[in-house]
Amino acid sequence: MSVQMVIENARQLVPAQLDDRDVVVAFFGALHHYNASLDLDFTLSDAWETIFDEQFRSSYNDPNMMWLLAKEGNKAIGLLIAGVHTDSALFCHRQWVEVQALYVADNYRHQEIGQCLLSAAYTWAEGLKLSRVQLYVTASNVRAQSLYAEEGFVTSQTIMCKTLW
Image (cartoon, rainbow, N blue to C red):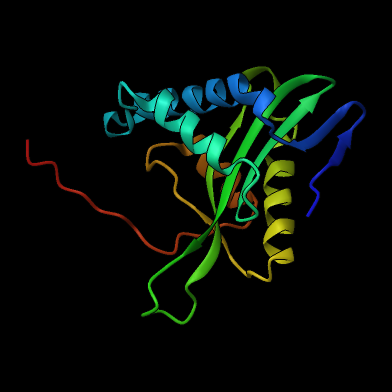
């Protein structure tokens, strides 16, 4: 399925390509740097860039993955990574699209770019005949939670953890 959509004027959503590797890595790193500022458990490993690069190269054109960039002209301004998730065969409703990362560059926030990226994920899920899109959000990331609530996301479970040391 071809994903290219005009947002407004010179803005568009396009599948990330190998040539986009540097910006994809930069946006993912910025997203997780922010998440780690909210909760140190989300700090990326020293080898994250190599691991992430391998994942991108092996799956950027996988039909079960969506690596999508929002661009203004030739400049990338947002990133969405989503994939088809298949849960245990124990469950009836075991497959959905999972948004793995959503990032919009600072100067482009509050311009509905995040909503457009999410909308592309919804359209992709519908095309795959999957009725659910889900994601994980850091508990203290109120900014992201607000966007997701506006988009109709609701809490379906809570992950609880206990730090032992």
